Structures are given as C-alpha cells and as structure tokens.
Amino acid sequence: MRNVKGLLLMLVILAFVAAGCGGGSPTNSGGTPNESTAGGQNEQKQEQEAGNEPSNTESQTRTIQHVLGETEITGVPQRIVALEWLYAEDVLALGIQPVGIADIEGMNTWVDIPVEIGSEVTDVGMRQEPNLEIITSLQPDLIIGLKNNIEAHYEAFSKIAPTLVFDPYPAEGQGDQYDEMISTFKTIADVLDKQDEAEQVLSDLDQTYAEAKAKLEAAGLTERPFALAMGYSNQNAVTFRISTDNSLAVKILEHIGLTNAHQPEQFEVYGFTTSDVEALPALQDANFLHIIQESDNVIENQLKDNPVWTGLNFVKEDRVYALGGDMWPYGGPLGAQTMASKTAELLTQ
Image (cartoon, rainbow, N blue to C red; front, side, top):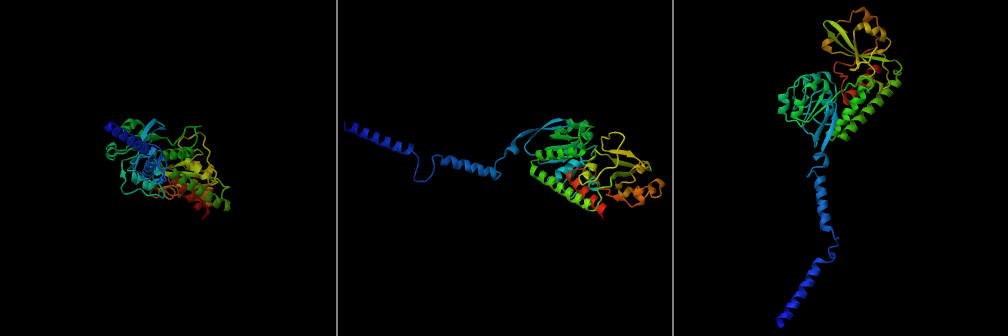
C-alpha cells in the first residue's frame, strides 16, 4: 500500500512538471510565443539579402518573345555572346562585358561609344558568319543576334545556348527604328536583370537631347532642315545612303529639334535611299551631315572637282558637316547620345 501511495505521488509530481514545460508562454525572457520561429525567419531573410540564397530572378525560368519565336531563360545570364554591334553596345551600356562579340575590330573602327570593349572579350568571327566552334568554346548562357545574319542557323545557335533574335528594321506601318531600338534595349536589360541601369542610360540620353536641343535653339539652327548621308566608294563611283524619316539616325536628330529634308519616293525598310551625287541638288538648301571613313574620303577624292558637288549651295556656303567614319547610325542608346551631342557641337561651332 505504501508503494502504491508513493507511485501515485510520483505521477502527480511528473504531471506538474510536464504542465510547467509545455503550457503557457515564457515570460522571463521578455520574448513572444513565436520568438524562435521569428528568429529563424529573420536569419533566412538576412541570408537572402546578403546573397547567400538565390533570389526569384536568379532561379526563375522566363519565356522571352523575339522575332523567331520564344526562348526560355532560367536565371540571369552571365556569359553573353553578341553577334551584332548594336546588341554588343546594349550589353556594354548595362555595365556588362560580353564574353564574345562578332568582329571586334570592325566595331572599334565604326562605332563611337563611350565604353570600351574589354581585352578579355573574344572575337567570334564576322557578323554575317560567326564561328560556331569559338562560340561553343566560350560556354555562353545567352546569345543575342540579328535576324538577317543568323536566321538560317538559328537552331544551331539555340543548341549552344538560349538565343534571342531581334530585327531593328520594322516593316512599313510597324513603327520606326528608334522605337524598336528602345524596346529591344529594355528587353535585354530585363533579361540581364539590369532594369535600373537601363533607366539611367535612357535618362542620360534624354538629358543629352535636352541640352543639345537648347544649344541649337539658342543659335537659331533648328529652322533649317538637314540631310544625313553615309558616303563610300563603289566600283570607283560615289554612293550615298541618304537617311529617311523611319531611320534611327533621323529620329535621334528629331529629338534635338531638327527636321529631315529628304523625303523618299517609296518606303525604305532599312532607313536610307541609295543614290549618287545627282540626288543631292534636291537637298542643297539643307545642312549636309555625312558619315564618311577617312580611308575612303569620297569628298576629298572623287567629288573634290565634281561640278555637281561644287555647285551645291551647302558646299558653297560651307554647310557640310563631318560626323566622322565611326558615327554608326544603326546603334543603341550610347550611339544615339554620341550622335546628338556631336551634331549640336558641329552645327554651333
């Protein structure tokens, strides 16, 4: 009987101990009922903020639409190959050096932007015929290309890495090259998780436009229209590509208050009319802006003593302005910034 009483007493004691451990909230620590759980969540949040765990952007798979369909991209690409100078410029503008660019020497010659291509970047061949073996060896996680250049081999590029393809030349009635340039730049920024950087680039561009326009207006130079032409030799003859209103270059200059004098007889999908010196008399009252390589200076060579050229009003009145051979009229926002500021500088000097 004494043993039974002892056993009952022991059970009562154990019941009180269990109740003390499992019931109620601790009050001596000043914490809350979920303090341990909350502490774990805070630690997890701090680790994510510190970059110890992938963010949603770094791990999610997105479907990106482009001119050749849809491409799935998982995470944020880090190793980019750009097969066109325009898209190389876009990536560089976002603060990223691609692992590969097509025709680096040509880009350095023709494209004037305030960002240099790093010495570590690999040349992957010509824009029209990039080298698949070199591209594969770079182990890219994103390839960006121009429709005209890579459409025929799109499947081969897609097997190497997710491939985005753009077309900077909208068809008639489908917008202009400027709007397409901005849209593509924003798409690339979104894919690379560089939206803030893109907004800063475009804000800087708008500021450049405003400053250039104010400079031209103050000098009274927005009233006279312009003509913009790229000139080069073609079988010992002089060829001009005269920019049309749908072109990227003309839209850039419109942003600084200028008006294009050249009105083509038909829509030009690439944004220029191909002609010769005989087309220039119709534009002679405009300011003539040109893009001509110094190594192929058709004005100093073929046209210097040409009576049609020397008889033009803009020649006689010294209204011919050289933008330089490296003023690439098919580029991105950095090239647009260069063109706007240099044009204002030339016209007001």
